[in-house]
Image (cartoon, rainbow, N blue to C red):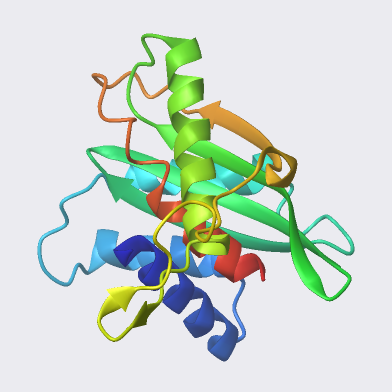
Amino acid sequence: FLAYAEQAFLDEVAEAMGKDPVQMRLDLLQKARTNPAGAVRYDIDRMETVIKTVAEKSQWGKKPGVSQGISVYFSHASYVGQVCDVVMQDGKPLIKKITSVADCGVVVNTSGAQQQVMGGILDGMGHAMYGNLTFKDGLPTQKNFDTYKLIRMKEVPEVEVHYVASGYDPTGLGEPALPPTGGAIANAI
């Protein structure tokens, strides 16, 4: 949930400053490189590569009529960036595509890695778009899956996954794709 809030906030700052969200993130990384505020516990070059690659692969800013949102996060020693493409349909946001780029070191099992990233994205999308739990008198109103909406197959957008061949030892991939998804969706909307 931290990634969701952090990345959505960064886009609000970019909008208030009149800056492109991708460029603002790259500018912040440059500032962290030259004048860090505290200890930098991630590899700035790897994060920068993920941002540039996801912007390129998603055709950032080059899709007329499509709203795009970016989100990038460092989790379990992996770097994951995502761009979400949204169009409005009948007054509601429709997620058309999520492009993801991960630097998780050497990818040992490409099929397994693909499934991990896609699963994380869809789980994150389900939380962001449909996960709603309400309470009445201290008890949950939704007590079973017939009253708690989960993502359905027909709601799954196109998901495109790419990896950075960084050559580093393998790192985490089971969780890192989920955190940036909510931010990318919120920023696109």
